[in-house]
Amino acid sequence: MDDDLKRSVTTGETWIRLAFILLFAMVVQVVELLLAVIAIVQWLFLLFTRAPSDRLSDFGDDLTVFNYQIWQYMTQNSNERPWPFAPWPYSTEGLDNERPESVASPTPAPAAPSGAEPATPAEPPAAPVAEAEPEASEAPEEPASRDEDPKPAS
Image 1 (tube, helix red, strand yellow):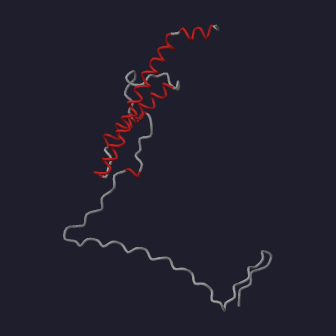
Image 2 (cartoon, helix red, strand yellow):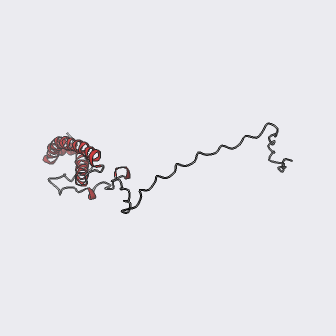
């Protein structure tokens, strides 16, 4: 055997990493199940309260970063072992933390002052007016060639 290969195969560090990969492969299954549950619960919040839960959203962000860190370790893109061997990953340390506008809480309509009549809805926009077709007695203008000056119709 080649000396490098022999060292690689006999080094305990390589085998320990395999044990952690197998352990984190099971952990990632639980994390992904939790993320699916969070997605369903967030949908229920959206259905009944018209806004997602901020605390649940933050926890989902944290789990997403944790999941990302696990995959980074398992695919040899990082040598840092994820939590519990490192601090818990907060979403501000990993992925983009902005909530898309389509999920943001709807803004309520301003309340009318007391004693005032309710505002009437705005009129719908008028339908566009079609341009009038030239009458049959009018002859359409011949398009001028590029070399000639355009002549007005008389």
